[in-house]
Length: 313
Image (cartoon, rainbow, N blue to C red):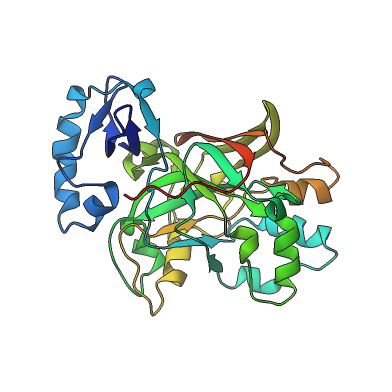
């Protein structure tokens, strides 16, 4: 199933699922929002009933403003799973590949209150300097757990979505000289959406292994209708299950937690510029379209200025 969060023309904030008829079934009677549904004790027992109701979906998609599929995650981490991206980014900075990449998956925390969906991405002037996109996939946790093992961690994943980890590279590079990881350079916007797709929808693309499921899903980016990036989710050197094993070591994960894959190879200007493929950064007015087969298309445009106050969900 494909879940979403949206605002109607009458300004009602709600959530739902794509029906068999291409319309959206409003599920606000189940819970006030998708996060509340995931935090309920028996959400998994309600899925069959939701599936049986898909034929009664009655909200035309073009009448809804789709926002982030999960607008209010309790936490957000971002991984570093694609070796191609890590190698190219380090090579372009003149530093060798780090052997630790192959020893364990790493991640950092990013701003879970700065999540956006489709539409404008507001960026203030300092962050506009060397502004970058990042083409990623992400998971949303459905079941709490601690000390998970990769061989069973996939069962804790509720769904998959597209993630654009917008990055202010000049700020990021200045800050990371102090060895504290991304801060203001990643603090202003992360886009998620448009759908949160349950694993069963992706079964035909699944590659099963003891280290966790991978998916043969093409990942692309277009900017102003020009192709920029192309990769595949199956090329993650660390699976989401392995990342979950690392994340949950000695720490509980909770329903609604978001974890990104990290950037796919060729999936940002920092990598492409350094490799001589492109010579550009994002600028006001640019239109970015991230696509992952099976997960949809995530559309954003760059607007210089302060973001509006976030809607309460």
